[in-house]
Image (tube, rainbow, N blue to C red):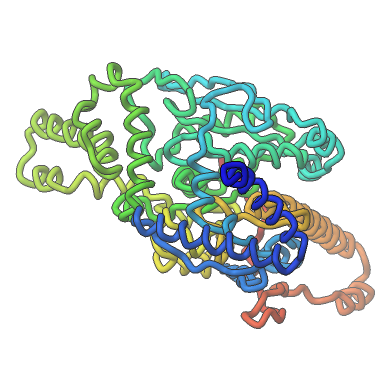
Amino acid sequence: MWDFFLCLLPSLLLVLVTILRRWNWISRLTDSTVKQLGRCMWIMACRLLKLPCFPVSESIEECQAEVRLICKPTALASHLKKHCYSLAQPPLARWPQSDPHLQIITNLMWPTKEGAELQGGVRFTRDNLLLKDGGIVALDWAVSLTDQQGQAKRDHHPGGRFLGLHTSNPAIVVIIPNALGRVTPHLLRLCYQTLQQGFYPVVFHRRGHGGCPLTTPHYQEFGNTSDLVQAIAYLRSHHPSSILLAVSEGSGSGLLLSYLGECGSSSYLTAAACISPVFHGQLWFEYELPWLYHWIALIYRKFQINRYATALSSVMDVAKILQCNSLRDMEELMFCALKQLDQRMSDSVDNVGKDSSRTSAKPDWVSYWERNEPLRDADEVAVPVLCLCSQDDPLLPPLSTVPEALFHNSPYFLLAVTEQGGHCGFKHQDGHGGTTSWSHSVVLEYFRVVADFFRVEEKKGFRDVIAHCGSQCLRHSTSAVPSRKRATMLRKERPILGSRRRQISTPSDAFTFEEEQEDFTWNRSYTR
């Protein structure tokens, strides 16, 4: 009999628990206990793995309900504050969705199929672009959605077509992956949402990344923009009626910011955005990342090098690179050791004296970052750039290293800082119990608002030209009028204002007015 009772004991306990959970207070108590127990176990696991722990909000109401926007007070910034509603709604999510480490696991580390045609509910088609030096970069076009409901929303969404300005062609969004070139779930969801809202997304893969073949015995440096310049010129020539936009993921911002600085007003982009950007490349490589993430990135990088070990062995010491214990050492051996060898050979051939030997003694690691820092030409940027950063990002240096002076002085740089979001996460809890990406919504809405602002500015500039031409014609026509009548007409002429007023925002969110310089205009003069 006791054996029979023991056999039924698990079933009886399950029935008892089911009956007790019908009472609301017992159900809430059980859920709270399980959640607290899971949180304690997760914190213990993070401490054992030596991962940084961040404060956790018990509920959405405890989160900081604001986004700190750092920018120069301009007409564009005022227009964004008024019309970009997503910036006023920060990413709010409960634990565990709000945990930065869980967001990194689900958004960046979760396995995906490299170079596959169908990923994340998006169907891709690839164009291999042959470059001037014989290298190849890949352009993965997101052409359709496998989800019928998402495809139906895309057909009726005006988003990308609204940005056509002078045509119904959808806007093209160039998506730049991180510096490792891995196609992450975060990037696939960005392609999905971009395509769903009527845009035309295309993923740019560097040579040797994302399944793109490496036809030249060298990789692209961290901030070398030569390949991206040719790719964007190709898009411009084949889609002249569509405006071009760009968004980068994580360390991929080093390439995008470098491109915007080098091209300046000759850039074909209308607007750009950087999600969890790297502002200082050298500092990021020298910064001590959590060992788990650093080890995973190091292993992934070594797999990339080992794939083309035979071709790369002619220009670099592959065996030594595969034995490196840090990303910094790998970057230095891949790009600085070769430069150092070429420098020694040129010094021996030219047979210059002590002055040249002092020049060659300059550390190659320092000279490498002089030509690859993302913000080396930040003063030349002539395209609005929105940067999204989070205070609990474990993969970036502290926010104290962010160059806030750049955002206060440049009219083209805007920085949005949130309390939670992790690295390329920014999970936001919707009203249906699920989560969405706050950063994706902000970026796409930002593109629409900026395009609307430029459309208004273009109309203003056109009206100013018409008014100026009309005043010139009026002055020429009055030359044939008698002097007495002409003097009367000249006295009635209105004075021309030397400056125009613009609306700016103050820390108290009250809007004031300040004089804007006469020589500044948001309409760029293309000098290419």
